[in-house]
Image (cartoon, one colour):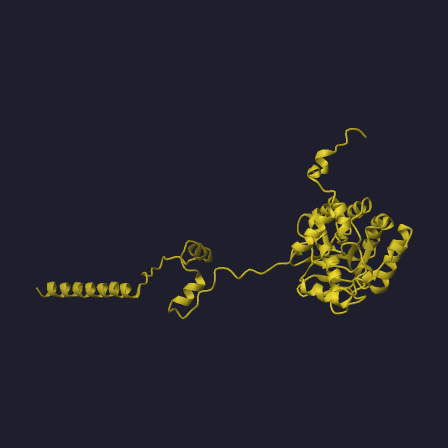
Length: 348
């Protein structure tokens, strides 16, 4: 009888202990811990968060645990845009792509502006003015593409309206396209110097025309004709968040008669400065002819090409868009189809 009572008392004690453990677990809301439980991986945490559960960081903020739960993955970092690969090992290529925030109209080109000298030693930014122009612009584009490199084109608005196909071809090839006024007027001379409204119209019609010719995003990059930069016009560009570009090296290619002279001018001046924003003109035939040899010599000289792109695209103003459209007095619905759909070479 005594043995029976002892066994019964022992069983009763064990039962009470088990009951206490269960009650404690219910009150704390935690699951029983077993030796065979596997740790939860970070990927499982991520899946739970995607399914509507609280993310790991939220859990750390809402529980009473003293140890914070780290996020499943580290926060992403913003990587620089990659430079396009080149299949030609002998090509000049592209070494660096830089993005320019044009807010407030910053000015570049050490010939006039010293504050932002962003090029490293032996780096060159290729720029062209006064295009697009039949024959010449396609030659320049081909040379750039053959060398797997890129440039910035400051186009005259009126020229762009004459040959929008050339503007589109540059854009399709990944070139940066800015503006160079509507009709290449010197804004430091009258009547533009006296009347800022006329200067604004010359600037804005150029921006609108280039944008309309490209038929897509263009850059809020601007170069003054003859590099004449009146203060009122510069201040206005600042309000429009359009960057101003002078140059570091002016090749004066428009004064040179032979392609080899263009190459010599560019390479001689680069040798002295060691780097620079290079100013040329795709309007000039001698420059178009010089491009393959110039690019070859840049490669041989160890120079590297930097391409400039804007952080945000250019915007146009409706008033000046309408002005550009009104200049095209011969535009009719008869000419709505693309040239390639109308004209075909059937024998050559």
